Image 1 (cartoon, rainbow, N blue to C red):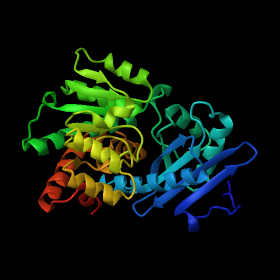
Image 2 (cartoon, helix red, strand yellow):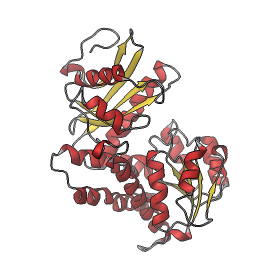
Image 3 (cartoon, one colour):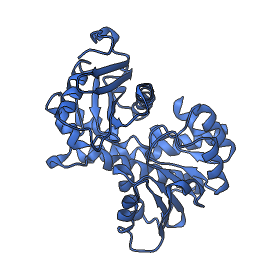
Image 4 (tube, one colour):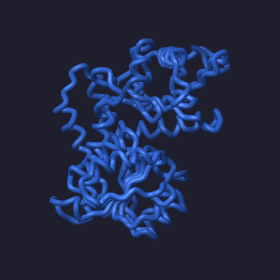
Length: 351
């Protein structure tokens, strides 16, 4: 596989963004390898109908940078990377695409290892595995969901528990005393919602651009404490904790102001790249508005921890869950150090 300029990808130019094109079939993809200092770059494949190729390229770069941070904070032996595919994940998947993706990954000589992400599930990953060995996180029994989604949710819940313990200044907290707003009920968001319910959360506003997802989650609850809200109002709900589990770039000047006006005291969720750019300014603004922000690349690392454990060849569900639950103490430590320095936890996590 060659990039658009026809330059063969070699070991000497792996770091950076690689563009892959099949003009005959109209296939376009980007792989950004942000860093391989700690080991091969590990990150998911994302498929979306991007506005243009520049938008897709930029998304791969930001997502790969986030993976570098996520893997480093979680103490994984992997660098950060990401693949994005330009196309509609509902209509554009076919065997030619899977072959194209596999061959593109192979051209990077093992420097990038692919997993699932938005628009790309374990069925797609299994199809790619027929063309490339550099994938991880396949579903068991050929299902469409994988352990990575469940482990991401387990890590998010551990982080939320740590956040509430920090706010309440106690080691024992009950989720029934807190109000949550859950944005996004996709593969990970639904797991997060179920975990919140099982952990005792009794008051929650839930929202998704596909309302049927919200209705399906509401059926899980046996009480009236869950309310389905319109996606346009998700930043205006009076709640304690905002839980973003959808797309990134959601925390802007406008939405932060709306969250502050709704008396939201903290943000903790699974979505990647929650802070719009400039990220540093958005983190500062959250701090100025007295909204605690749990950095996404800290709290949502459960899935990549699961993938890294699978790469060892000696996978243990118990050991993996133990490592994922370490997200809780890590979050509380970051929040405590940020409080001591009177700064956003975002900057502590980056240090």
